[in-house]
Image (tube, rainbow, N blue to C red; front, side, top):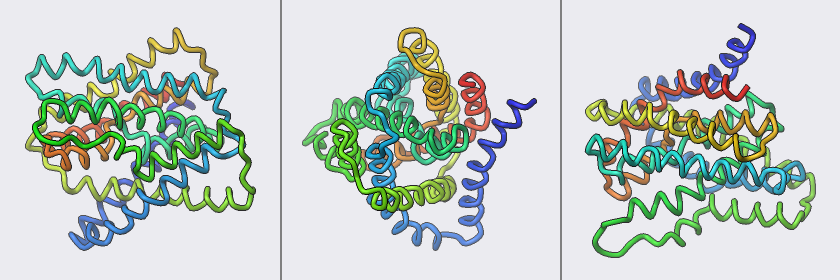
Length: 301
């Protein structure tokens, strides 16, 4: 009962913030989406990169200690892709539609606040390490899969690495590897700005939920189940071969249980890769997280 109450105390605030964003948008209508566009841009281009950079550049982030977790996170993303590929083939789905959302889970706007609630502020560095590993896999293997079989010029992967998130990640990694200290006052200011992105991301997720339709509910339901189950299966195998401490193990299972990221819908829309199906996967996946996230926390604990 005590473990259940703890898990409930971790996930309820997250879903309440998502529900607030959803309810407020239903109440106020399209004006909220229009107003949120600038906030989303601020979050993606400034606040999230600052959160990532400040966590990596912090003296509390130990790159060497987190290296096994980074490798494990990348392999969970890759394992989810490999396990979901035959499912897509078996059910007649286009792998370019189905597989990328399986490998890029909601480790940003859901995973980061969940990790802080579950493991305290000290757990942010491990969550950021997993976020970094997952992003690297998606922006390389995932984007290449989306580009496969297409006619005409391809979007360069290098352009993806020029995004604010990737630049912040690479700069933060350099600071962590070289142990370059930042003035504590500056680091605290960057951290406070970055942490403002966490409630904003959850509200934005609730706002985006209002755009999703249930026309493609079948692929959405399959994706909602396959994403966390393939992640948890990969994590269960990896813990046998990669040495992790108790906190890292808990973080890995929480990470593995997360639903597909909202960002997958944004990318599918940009590539015109059946965005309505990806939206259904994201929507139903985030609803299914009410069951799978507690399972991941329970396994991790």
